Image 1 (cartoon, one colour):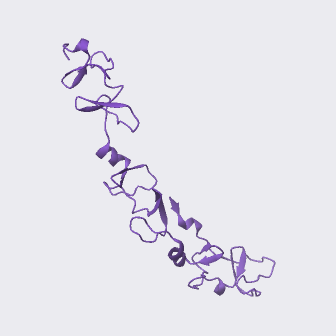
Image 2 (tube, rainbow, N blue to C red; image 1 turned 30 degrees about the vertical axis):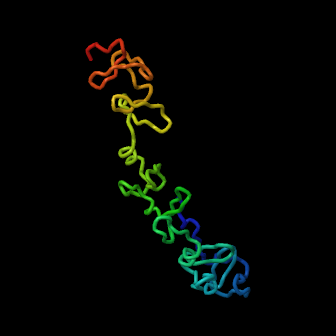
Image 3 (tube, one colour; image 1 turned 120 degrees about the horizontal axis):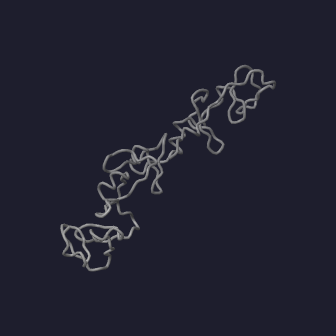
Length: 199
């Protein structure tokens, strides 16, 4: 995420007793009286203007792009990216995700509608979900340990549940039952040796 206001610059009033006679960066004439310092040069206050709309940039701030200065409004109209969701220009905070650019408030969890900002998220059917909602809605938990089964984990399906491969064990002796004959009593897996033991 970027905060575009971090590149916003401000013109400054001249330092007291700078010791040299300032020359205006716009008209190249000697400046008598009040002047501004910006971009390493001095300016008559009325000549430090937006290259597009010509508004005086004495107060507020400005953006510099390719040697030209712009007021915030003109800079945003000319250079601000469009939001991939609402298609409007983005001024202020930007969210980059999925090789696209969004308003922070436009890139939000499809379930809880909270902006995702710089948190982990998951995509499901083209929609982003925060980690909490994704786990709640789409996550699979191991019936043996009650922890989630992450992508890449080895797991198996048995007795109508999902199990980590290391959690599918006999309920009595803890012998691993992956790929072996097993029995079931009260939804608990049992090895052949404990198939008829009380659970």
